[in-house]
Length: 149
Image (cartoon, rainbow, N blue to C red; front, side, top):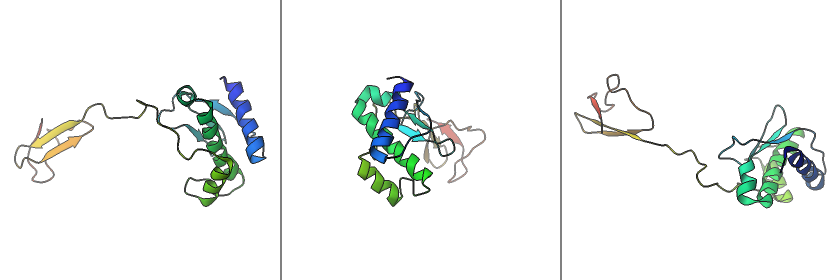
């Protein structure tokens, strides 16, 4: 599916399910990792994750587009467009959009390595995502020296 096909699909879904035109841009963004799509409040554009189409097919893509169109139309109409708002929940249920998209295996940002430290004085252990400068930082419990495990 190309960008023009996506734009046409979004416009068609907007006209058939929402009875209102979609007057802005819809495009694929391959940099999206953990979300199916997103709606921009300032430009009113919609970006869709192309990996969702590859992994789960057109049905999933249509559900994601309906979800983003709910944000779009409610924001344009100055009604509750956030996930927590009742207007959003009702419109999403009415048009049959997806509340959450499926997860692509391996797409989640998981920490590559955790760094473990132990206090040489009180034996308190610390686990951090980022390295700690042991010359600068000390144990929060007893102010003792930290050592990388």
